[in-house]
Image (cartoon, rainbow, N blue to C red):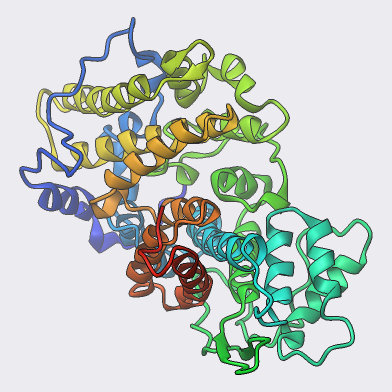
Length: 462
């Protein structure tokens, strides 16, 4: 394991967790200090023993992370920029983790934007929509993996002088290949990114990128932020992450929850080292491999294959009723995850409950909800998936559970369902820490306006 960080920060993780938690006993979902008791009959306690919360209950395992301020920023605060700056300069798996986290955040921000555009200027298109919307739809459909529609939209710009063309060229060139390989070469974008370097963070790009005009008598102008900018920054961080490790399939597997649909399935045969899953939604490394199988050709059928080695798969197995995840069982099992983590960590601390125990247990509960939601979606149960996603979001009211990639993933899911209110709130809050996410606001605002108009000026929600 790589011992990253600053020596003077030894013990800061434990201190921060203890101070930040205090006597916290209840969040806004009503999660109490008395969750269901987990037994071997009701809960996979054997798999829990291999989880990162239980492994890092051992002082000698946890101390390298306590010594690194970057790990505190990542796990306790979910501050990706500070994490990248602190963990990145010396490279290695910690740098790969930091930049992979940043890449997934920008992936989901761009997918939120893309889903919003597909809903607003695709499904709900109007004759007055600006011609340059064809470019934004080209990129949106490309990210969604629908290359046929991406080419249809790209063709609408042939022979025009639309101001979006400077941003469209690399995408048009990529789509000209009958079988384009991801990712496209976006070096031709009018976007200045620094040389890829571990520990660096690209500065915000000035907005707007160009101005579009509605196809109406008034020709109302629309200051536009280009979706490709978010894609380029995501690929920049992804490239740095890959360069920090010898086997870049580790980066693919780590990002499996939050990849673009165009990227396709991931080979889950590698195993994540602790640096790549400590503090994450993968409680054991096989959880990532399980989700890779779910996202591949096995779908929800992967539960039976992984239930004896993936904690998440075991939870899915126990949450099923007649072959599908039951939401009430899923919610109880997520609560049991929190309780089991707390109980085992307390046992390993000679009966004492330390502040970081509750923090790690909170992360475990939300991780279970997010993972179960993904499997419910793979089972075709959109309603149950949505319920679990939203409960996970409602449970993310502390910094350590408010993973920006997960929040934006819910925003992307909302946008695909033509519901921009929550997505708008998420983007607004995250811009304070990550100004480049201002670009994503354009897509959300377009969707909000379109939904509001369609509903007679009422609130833009479902």
